[in-house]
Image (cartoon, rainbow, N blue to C red; front, side, top):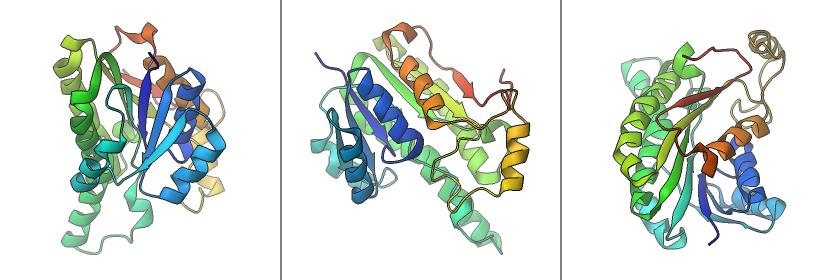
Length: 241
């Protein structure tokens, strides 16, 4: 039986690279996201074995409406949707603005993963895999974004024990700087890029393929006794413990 994967936020960046890696491993991959045109373009480029189901992972009604189009059996779920919403918002000028900024990051990065995982838990196959994208920001800060990613670590720990009796693993992959994604919007200033690269032991920025390869391993049969963990993919910029 062909294994099936669902990758949220799979139209660009790390999600797209993950979809490519899982498809190369022989999985049937469903990518999701808010923008149908972006998903359709990714499907055309990734080719056979990948299809798209558009929905917003933060909106319960959209998730529920998409369920008939999603696989009835899911071996691998990758919660990749999210990003630092502060980068596309004006600086908060009052408490109401600060509240809205923090809630936006929590919704995009933590609530989205919780909702999609809850919706698909009845369809997760015994021995399945759940991988959630974290961030180096959970250890180093970044206001509401870092807090949301740190919250994901606590949720993942609970999830690992809740699903572990069925042989399902739940892990977090936490990237550092990864280029060729939409994370920084219009682009990362060169001075900031240089500073971030200087924090690594490898002397380079990460690539989507670096993170995707780690996710593909955690999705494999060989990772069946790895669960509740945070795997850092950052070139040594943060030495996780």
